Amino acid sequence: MSQNNYQHGTINRREFVKELVDLCPEALIVTGLGSPSYDVFAAGDRPENFYLWGAMGAAAAMGLGIAIAQPEKSVLVITGDGEMLMGLGSLAAIGAQKPKNLTIVVLDNGHYAETGMQRSHTSLGVELTGVASACGFDWTLAVREPADVSQIAKQVNAKNSVGLANIFIEAIEYPKALPPRDGSYIKNRFRGNLGFEPF
Image 1 (tube, helix red, strand yellow):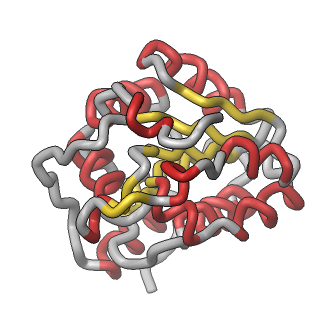
Image 2 (cartoon, rainbow, N blue to C red):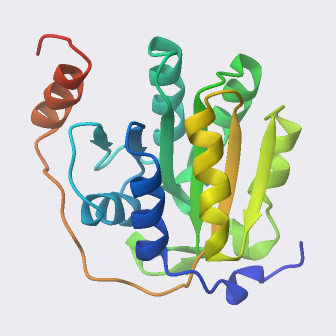
């Protein structure tokens, strides 16, 4: 992949996320902070969603924990390139554990959108699909066409492999759709959906 590929991202992230969530109605979804949380919430709030408000770098690691704890459920992490870069080591842990019910989707605009649109490492030649492959993921996919959403959904729903899809989105901002901010509420709602008591 050549440098500055982010300039060629044309996918509307909000539309893409909406379609992906609709195609994976039973998936447990963990969102990275910022834009991915806004997009998933805009697609329709549901108790299966766990929004990470300020835990930058933790989305993939949390998805791994949930996938291990809930092996019969499909787990979908939707995060951004900046957040994924901060939690890059979690890809190694995921590759070592190989949960068959986990899919990581990275919305990659080549920028740190939440801090002022500074260029991220993915705009400087870092290939997240290459990192995931080197970590032992079963599959990776670089997505430049919206129609590829169906291929990702098929993997999510199959629950037979661990993979990462890097979605090259437009480097533009969308109106914020703010999910609940109460961490205890989000946690207890998510746990309750799985049949656990609040704590």
